[in-house]
Length: 467
View (tube, rainbow, N blue to C red):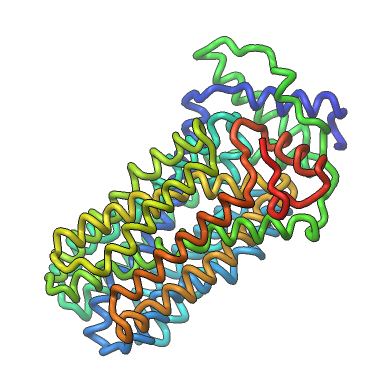
């Protein structure tokens, strides 16, 4: 700590923790959530154009799976390097760079001359997406008070689902109105157009005070907190900072990665089942409905309803994770999701399929807010984005690349029932791992979580620190 003494730095964190939700903090949360909306619109674009390209280019199941996962492969490759950059150079800088990169590459995807070029461009766009994915909830975790983190994470993750919901709606407007050879190109250009939002983020999203303190930039951290306090004072009288919110030390010593590896393993094991279910539902729902005999417009409309079902699920999950706890809510949501996955393959009437898929989306995709905030909380400020990125990199590799690419092959070989039985079994395994070996972080400041884990002197993921 180079500019504030230890006591002043501790009080700065306590001042931040006492801030209620006012328009200034809501603007910050909405700006961060908007970044996820833009990204999910981009990611959801492939599910819209995939049925068109499958027929237009006569793609094999293997080619369909590879194209569906190309951006996810890029995300996985980009996650950890981007996390390291965000922990070193700042959350906002990397967020803006990532949005600019994937938006530009998606625009270029609309001009791809063929399958190979589109595959490469989707992979490169994924690199930029990987830079964005861990950042909104890491930023919000470092700004908002301890009893609002997952509540707001539910709002943030709902913004992701809004983007996934809007993608097929845009497809309903664009794809049927144009010849197939042109429609997918126009759609990708439209999906990449929100690149301009990166400039809005640069203007309105301040850097995390906790990150600034971690890097010896206490004067800047003080200025950010003071601006938030001044805005808050227009609406309420601020109480004195609570002693309970004072971090145990001003700047915790760096924790070696050998002691953080267990937390990565736990988070990834829990997240793999969730990402597996999410990627299959998001990417293949239009294709599955089309295979059941529905027209492409109706398949896209059904896919939009399935995606929309995740929005109330995420909002409920964020609220319950804050009031009940991260662990029990994750176990409950994934348990219901696993049951719906087991049922899905045995249903054939379109409306029953739609209802079951909506429940799978509500509980499966809806499980993300508490889970994402949970594994961000397990890492100290200096390694938070890198740690969360490592969790997502492993989980997206297993669930979003291996699992999602395997699904078309599985249902062509064994049928949809067996393929969705695999999804359900993976979901049960994920909830069991977190339920048995996870830690509960509800109601603790980020600094208190780290102090408790380090006081035990052992990785939480292995020994299960419990509150």
